Image (cartoon, rainbow over the protein chains, first blue to last red):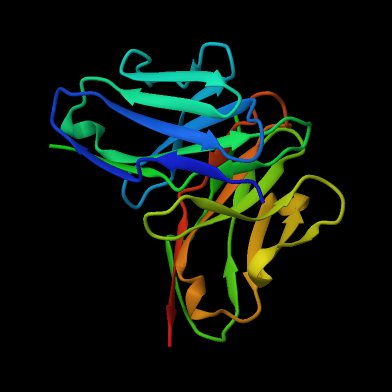
Length: 116
Length: 115
């Protein structure tokens, strides 16, 4: 079945540094990818939608200069958390959707980010 | 805008017993409904989805869900729970499939299975 690979699965970084998270669709072309953030014991909050070759669409309240999203190819989207702060610590999950009207969403296994 | 309510934050069930997780949605048109399961530290796995047609939907791992338009509900059920079913369960509603395909998730229900 379709697989979405997310890397790294966990990362610890120092405050002020930037962290890049990759989301790859391994056996299908993902025209659309989504980035979610999940706080402990809470639901997933959509951060942004990225379409290959165009700028990402950010949800209200999400800082686009803070969370840089690039979707340069049909199999790869990246989320870069710039100048990370402890409050950015969270679980980030990507999902990818293939082409076709009813193509399903496939989720990555998430990235646990801890900013110290 | 669409929204999802999962009234039960935490459910404890004995192994072998039946399980029902409630989900209510708010959406102005025909909803696209999903149930996902998440194990600790993992991503989400799709259990089942409803787009149209038969309102009783069969999914993986022995789960089923019934869409009831009159009650704006999409409850998930399993006749006999296994210890491996302990996880977090999310109900989600999506807009009509489009380029955006946005999902709104409920707050989740944590299922604990006791021996």
